[in-house]
Image (tube, rainbow, N blue to C red):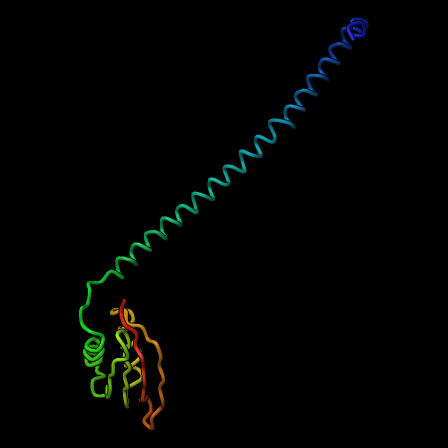
Length: 159
């Protein structure tokens, strides 16, 4: 190799050295620089995505805290029977509430005759949302008067 190098002209040596340097630069670019840059771009994109996920998680955590605070109402020590009777009267359903009977420790059944359906449904929503009373079963039959139903419900106790 040394003999070959010494045997070529200075101009050829410059061309060979320039070509070798060009090959080294190309090899450096293809093997090191370009993969490094591609990885760097991918990591920057991942960081941006993870920051967006973090922002969403923080927003969701705040929403969970807000909902938990809203759900943490003061304890209502009234019995389920008393609660149903008092809220029904407050909703204007007292006259329609014909029979309320306990079914074990945490359930009760109620019968409402000729009750306005448009008042019944919001009352059930108030029981569930504000007092954490769940609707276990519901059946309603139409009456001859439009808008009035005969309803039988079973309500579950509060946690």
